[in-house]
Length: 263
Image 1 (cartoon, rainbow, N blue to C red):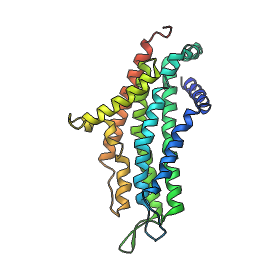
Image 2 (cartoon, one colour):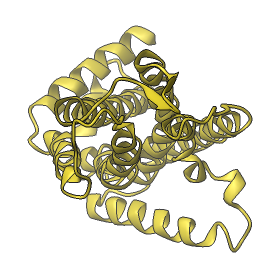
Image 3 (tube, one colour):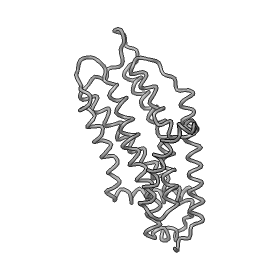
Image 4 (cartoon, rainbow, N blue to C red):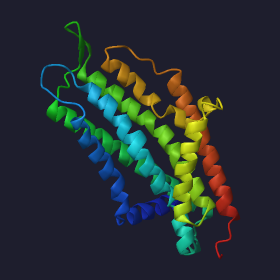
């Protein structure tokens, strides 16, 4: 099974590389980062510019990047259903859940690419235009440059958890309809509705979308020369994201297993 999923995943990656839409996400994320210096001036004045990184990365990923991630993943299965190519794929010794696993892995890879694009662009601009020699307070270095980098990398890794849950959410909707436009529109609409109602309904602590900013909080506190704590907030982030991923993937698998591919 693992070998078949791996082969299917590699084929999905090769197919994605040939599509121009695949490059739209990273390009727009980088452009968003590149535009941020217009809102924040840089000067080589000896004052650290980690605040630019702390502000820009979540904006690029949780706003622009998230919209593109949902749109991309919501088209992964519905596009195959609409075109009928899924029947050709399943003629091979490939089961439906293996096909879905390959799609999920592709979406997760896309999330990693978006995160890496945002991180690389943000740090490159901050390094080129500002100062990244650590965070000092009262003339003393509170957090070294290496400590800031490690905290950022840890936050970026943790930020993938809610993004992976978003991938499974979009793939689930993609599995429920043959219409790509309906899948993309549904993903966007449900996201906005749930984000609007989660606080009035007091459901926010149980939704993974609540924790999109959580992985960056420790880094943001260190920018202000304050010590941040990973727990318990990061634990809630990882738990809700993992549970959500499993639920969405299970619903997607059930929907795909029950679907008549000949109609």
